[in-house]
Image (cartoon, rainbow, N blue to C red; front, top):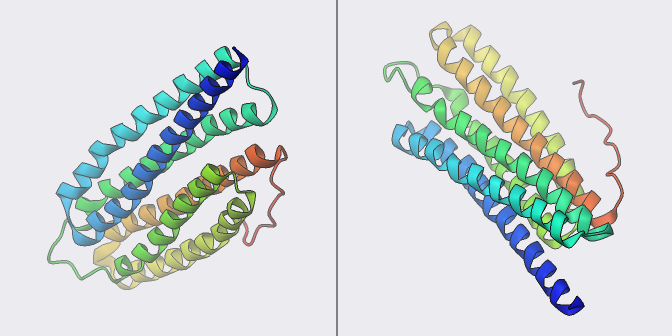
Length: 229
């Protein structure tokens, strides 16, 4: 009976990790596709990103249901309980990442609304910021799968670079708006895009902290801020 219970619990944990991995893969892909839609002026791809967000939401519901079942039926303790709790919080963070990617996709039509407008030069720098954000999401989910607090810590440190990226793009966009008043509406949408990417990094950092907690049982050490909040 004990062996059967252990095997059943291991199967549940394996399923939980699998659901988190699926969510993460979809969210990471949504970031990349939303940026392709934005920079390529592809409203059809943007619409697809928005529609596909429902799959991430559905997976989050599955994670919540399974986690509650595990706690109720398996009564996990110590390390196992931490992993279940971490999975619940990580699922919520990934769902928000998917929402931010959807928000980026929704800006596609507005940014590309005026084909005769001067080409938005700042648009060319946003994909690099998006790549950094997507890599953080990818790596922090690898850290969760491997229960690797060192990799999680590395992801947390990379959030500094993403914050710096956002600060630079913010200044660039503000300057561009002043020099090109006709583009104010479009550039305002790019400001929202940059902020969404910065928030994706914040959520990846939150996931990293949960990975550290699940793996070590201790709260991740506070970071020294690299800029005023």
